[in-house]
Image (cartoon, rainbow, N blue to C red; front, side, top):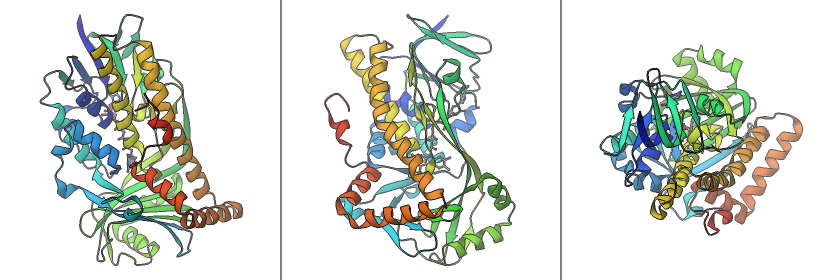
Length: 401
Ligand SMILES: Cc1cc2nc3c(=O)[nH]c(=O)nc-3n(C[C@H](O)[C@H](O)[C@H](O)COP(=O)(O)OP(=O)(O)OC[C@H]3O[C@@H](n4cnc5c(N)ncnc54)[C@H](O)[C@@H]3O)c2cc1C
């Protein structure tokens, strides 16, 4: 029977980055994905533009993936403005407040995935098997295993990175709290005649949210969040109707706007697993925590999850202890719960406050915006969280990084 030290289920951004993090170890790693190789080595554009924090950038560099990203595909986000309703008043953040070159960097998701594949491909200790549907999995005290259609493979540690709707998490008996926002995001790229000055706009219009993220040149990523039934009717608009609607909603701030490419639709469901571990088993990436995209933290947290788990494994190798022990897994779970719970519930609170159009909620968000704008320490703290330049105080405690 075939045996590996670590089996990773899912060759998405979380699974591949975890494999890269184990590159300089003696571990034999198998990555399984149900999709064909061509969709992993050459992923197609999916409309997602990922806003990476500085910490994520460092992490991508460390695992050897950033080197595979063409800098023409990276756009700095130097400022961000939040608008509420029709008001011209905005809550603004800029890189001066953070003493950084940029608040974050926007990179297309398919470019990140391709770079991670290029980083994994030459690794001699990592095997990638595509078209591999996991039909069953289980674990006991001494090992874990997966069943494919025609074989069973064992390992010391089994890690699932198979998306927020992870079937393997469910099979291992891990419950998750799911928040169906009953809203969908339409994402696409648009060109415009006026420059964006590398400024991201988040407009909480009544009934819908419009986010505009600066790409290279006069091009932006557009994210329209609306109720799921309205999303379907927006998808039926012609390209011209859609473009002119967005242009009007932005009150011409970006001049004439044209749709560039396809409009992608994503139903929005937030997921937080109740536990991240079981015997010789852990979940990482969206399988652990699937965020609402409004705070742009999904993959940033995914990168952190794999890094936290990999660091624990590397420490165990150095000490000569079991890489699948419950003590190791519990340390991973404790650290990742600490960093994701506040972010997950905080994001859901923001979504609740900014998508609730009752009179009370409108007053509350106007007050929140003015308070945040006028209280310098609060604004600095929000900016630090956005950029992840400074880690929260509890993450600085010994043993927590
Ligand atoms: C509109 C939108 C905008 C976003 N913007 C941002 C942003 O600005 N910043 C940010 O940090 N994040 C953002 N995100 C979130 C980010 O895209 C996700 O967090 C990230 O893609 C999750 O990666 P993952 O590897 O955990 O899962 P996935 O990307 O879902 O990959 C899962 C992999 O597992 C495989 N798989 C599934 N089931 C099986 C199985 N049974 N057996 C084998 N393989 C399996 C799949 O084929 C796939 O390759 C955004 C998301 C959306 C929808």
